[in-house]
Image (cartoon, rainbow, N blue to C red; front, side, top):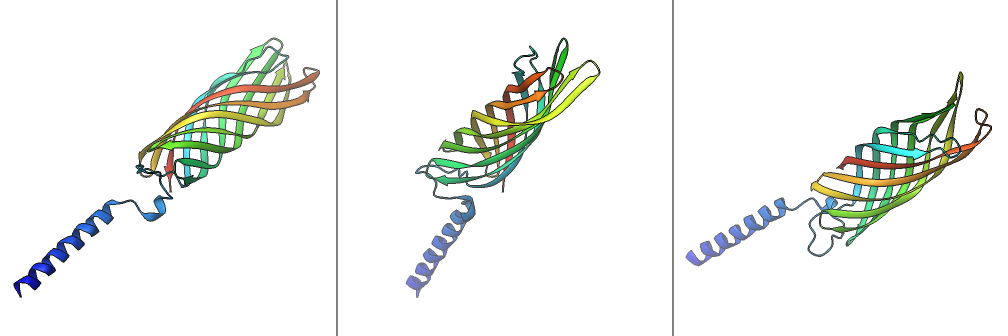
Length: 205
């Protein structure tokens, strides 16, 4: 009888220990084939906010719009071992503008739709990104003004740090070329070549 009680006690302790260990592990949906030795997983949906600074050039006008920016972003990641890939979109408001007589050009808003490919080392993700860029460009000369939507492309690099199971922070650099369109105030085609440095936080669902 004592042996049976001892055996049951050992089994109970083992079961309790196993349950406690399982409770400490992240939910199964949070992991998707993590790399050996890695405890952070990037797979799934996320959304967040970013702020940063923009500087660039409107060729042919000597204007160099620059200013602060801020906006929202969201996307989805897949993970296979250390390899992380996915898609991301964002929409930003920007205060970038510049005046060089007789012209003033500003880029009040822009957005991107990009792919991301990277390598994760535990909770640190290094990635490259590229895809579609679009945005508004407003030209002014005296009492005349024109506003057009431009479409182009973007490429960049970034690093993202997992702070907790559902939170991460990132910093990234993007270069964007918004293609030329005809402007009557300049009598020629103008576009925007611009750079972005952005920092942000993401919430992972």
